Image 1 (tube, protein in one colour):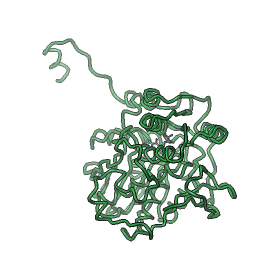
Image 2 (cartoon, rainbow, N blue to C red):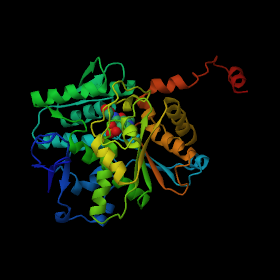
Image 3 (cartoon, rainbow, N blue to C red):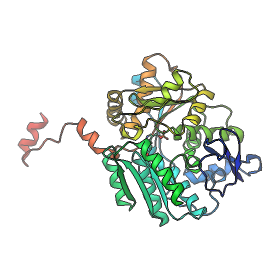
Image 4 (cartoon, protein in one colour):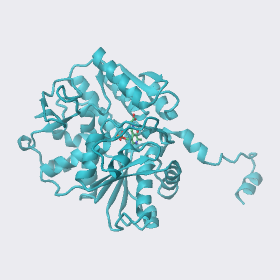
Length: 400
Ligand code: F0G
């Protein structure tokens, strides 16, 4: 049992209504469950496999979901990197291990299932890449046509390859993500297509399971959860999920929600630092971490609340810091991530160096997408393979 509730004025909408913003005040909506009436047992959850649908009682899908077996991603203890930073309890939740290689699959298994449940015939999104790759895959699984709008020339190669191969209609616009999102929103409203960006409250329902899994894997609530922030949906989603665990009496405190942005697109960081009531968009966001190259985060209101209510913070890292951490994660921990994902850990490194982190803190960094998403940025940082003649002498001479 659930309804859609406006986060601004509290107006309520029925769950079968296709609506993304409040008709009265224009704010976004959130899914609200009647948790008292739900029969949820933690022991029952524990008996199920560690996968997203373990938590189905607090997900909005009633029938069989459109699933590619998402969730249940590894939580790694980062021993070597942690020691270097003086942190004994530093973890990475590797969301790149989802079916299409990013956390977006959590949102899409729920979002595309809801498209089916609501009787929609077509789905669409704007994307910096991962959302489009994931939507394309889940729409393929559902047998539904998908349209994706990308900022031309600013999407990593692997993500475009996925969207194309899974059969979406891929359209590149000569502008940035923020404009693509406006356009796809208008398209969906006028054409009756189901919008699967994170303005869709059901997307975030899937993504909240990151936080639920962290608690189950750690056996406790971490002191801090750190996420890279672009459109600010994921940090809002994780906060919401943990809030529901508190309401259910399964946990008794919140981690400090911590968002990391790239220095060239950091409206959330500036809003937190300046104690502003809302974000001031960046007109021309720029960063090598194209996944989070976003100037007007649509979920900023939810994210600012999540950060402020939990005593968390937001900070930014430079492209150099992002790439250095991408290499460190790969070479010291064996964790291969795309640049945006390295931002969460790079942010913690910076905060440790500034003396803003208690070394005893238990910290979970969400690393959001796989290394193979952006092979071009990887190759540019590495020496090319050493090519030799096919004889042992040549081999030994390059190894000496
Ligand atoms: N990390 C990666 C790898 C992402 O792809 C994204 C967002 C984020 C972090 C930020 O998450 O937007 O919820 O704050 N990618 C979106 C996309 C915008 O279109 O794929 P957020």
